[in-house]
Amino acid sequence: MDDAAPRHAADDPLERARAFVEASDFEALSLETLAAVAGLSPYHFARQFNARFGASPMAFARERRMALAASRLAGAAPPALVELAFDLGFESQEGFTRAFKRAHGVSPGRYRRGANRKDLPMTATLTLNLTMQPAPAPKPGFRVAGISGVFSETDKAGIPLLWPRLGARMPVPGLTGPETFGVCWGEGPGGAFHYMAAVPIAADAPAPEGLEVKDIPAQTYLVFRQETDGSDLHPQMQAAARAIWGERLPQSGYRLANGPDLVAKPPGF
Image (cartoon, rainbow, N blue to C red; front, side, top):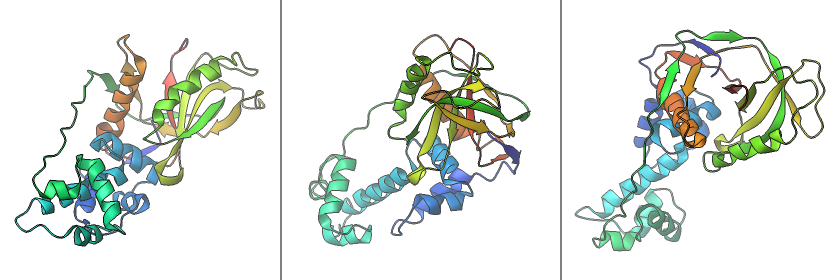
């Protein structure tokens, strides 16, 4: 997946960041601050944190504060709403009320009077056939051409739409092989990332009309192999990404470099 160097596997950067959030209930937080606590770039940190905990770092922090607000409102001596709003860093009681209602489905005033939280939907899980190559693999640099976009955790479902746009332009001049690559790199604002649906082209090939060109540097990669089961591909890819970024990379004992990640797809994709 990315350039790697050994690290002590017992030091979990995501748990360190999560603990920092939970110890910072009344402090202003930012993605950059939490990434620094984890010792990762904002891009890699946001992807790993979302995969592990099911929410972006800042959404997790907001949910934590809304849970704290609910706990205080349900206590024996609940505070005034305006006091609680300011304690939690909101500029007004109205802003706090809107955020609380989004989180719990009822206003904080009704919650304080005994209204219950909304039930959370169950999330389906997939059985993955995902394996990791025992050792990192070096790969030389190469050039790709394709179509890219900037995405975040909230709109990354738009990534598959890039592939038919690329397919409509095939074959492209300078094509060197039948593989296709999803190329992912940062840094975008607020943890957003770039994703390119791409094909390999000759190192000296110019940009084909209507496509972008990107040079992928020589890197050492952690390599994961996913075998799909013939059902809808996108949910399987999302489940693999959650497992890789949320569990296997943080537990791998390697430190990620700030370089592009590759999703290598077989010929005929």
